[in-house]
Length: 255
Image (tube, rainbow, N blue to C red):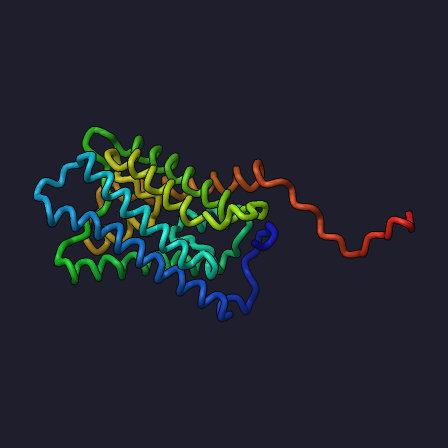
């Protein structure tokens, strides 16, 4: 992981092969994640006419999302960092761990990956993506707060296991930890607002299924939560990075 710095990005970064590879990794991995996650919802709708939230249905959806996110992050973490989520990318951006150019590339790739996944589901399954919405009686403000808290927990976990320079061998379990916290958060937020925690994951189903109810909270909430997690972990948890010396220190015998 590069040292903390805030930068727009080098002039050659926009066309550098590493940027292209990382962007493609974000696109394909996001597509894999959304296809399996949203597809699990459609599969349950196909098997059962009753689409109300039941404990078994909630557990199955949470498990499908967690397993698919685990696999998608593991397949891209060595190339792009395994963000798959505009909120994660935003957290890394405000923490100075990614340039603005790379962040914009990731955002475009994540949104396109989600859209393509939902289009594939529409063609293959013949069903409109269900998308996300706030449950009756919950209210948009409560849904917004829930998305902030859930996404904070997700991005904090990403920082601790995948971004923190001091993570050491903990980085080997980053995909598993990220998948587990995502599943756990769906078990909490699913009955209330679906537990999106991902603007791209909410945008694809909303666009392809044309379901825009309460959609704004799935952008504002995750971006606030992800940004807060990035700032808090970066400046309150990660130790201050030592200054970069431009000279060689003196040998002990020269003191």
